[in-house]
Length: 506
Image (cartoon, rainbow, N blue to C red; front, side):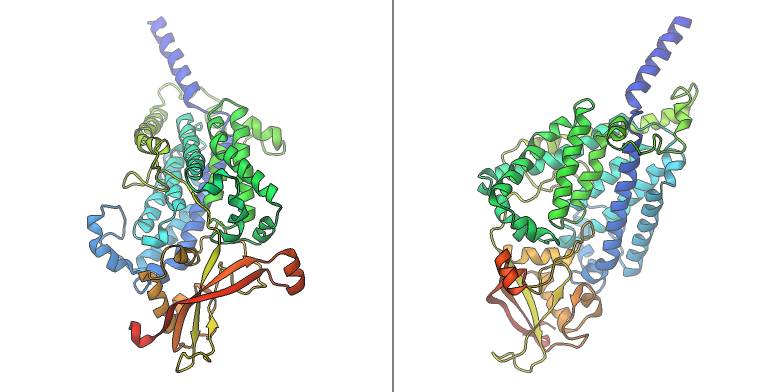
């Protein structure tokens, strides 16, 4: 009996040693608080924009959308009933839970408390995404959902960080990075001949304050950027799975390249998500080697499981936790077949979910690069007749290029959804339902819609006519800027939607 008990104790100790990633406390802290912070930004962005875009009187009203929603089979609290008041309640709840997690309060309690908090964020935000239509059709939406679900199983300070969940988070970073790299290699020729960044900094959806400086770098630097990108996305992701310190070094490369992207443009929370998630491969000794001032123990209650054998004899609560983690891990492993198959497919999908819960997705971005920046400029006039001598005034957007001398702002990780979709219009078609609804709202001087803009040229007064025209935007060279003070050279192209009056769209 004593021998059998000894074997059982040895097996339990071996299992605990494999399951408990004791050197990843800092990683868990960054992952939990970082993902919670991204949820906070996402709920804040939705609270400020969703009612005008998708609310009861929005451009694409959710009540109309959910009438046929039962056929889609997507989970959402709004599946059977939507109101702006209910939506604001969902956002307020999401903001409160996110803030508590950022402060680390649920992490001080039992393991199920942060689990419940993150699953609540996942469910609440999925309810929004699944009725968000084109305004929520971005890869970073499903990325946040998958990250929130997976991070939920990291536990609290009362239990050690579980190794299976950290490995699954590394797998998420691998799919994010390697998927983006393969999309580029299989995409436009500009990624293979190393010329993609001759154009990208200028033509990206939402330039930042330094984008022009990046664009004006010598072409040999742009070629080095592309080579560095290929290395970071096609080679480094494999190294994330290597033992330490290789895994931490690979994560450092991911973080560095993502910070380069943060500095060069605005991509909502995509880059910040990659930075936070990369910490799944970073060990505590690696952090202390680089940042010796970081406290040895970021978790005030972590001493509880460190001072005794874990799980302790008879600690059935701890074994329940182990069972929950292993069950969730088995689910995510099973769901990994489809995205893994997609990564090696000749017809690789970009930013696609393979199940209704948006778990274990496939990711990717910018398989091809736009060579010219064509902007859709929206204008209105108070003149009775929109003839050639009419005075047209331009509506200014928050994130889109506007006045030629204006420096673009840094918005990320905040997401300007209207501005992003405006970038897609010349690449697809201006004849989108939501865009015509947007023009109608401008004719009505709708206050909620006007709040989405940086400047209403009519100060709340209704214009008689609105129109849309295309214009070519190019970054000014240093010589042009010194001569004119303008950062953009703007070339008018053509009117793409003729003048529309309210009676034509009412």
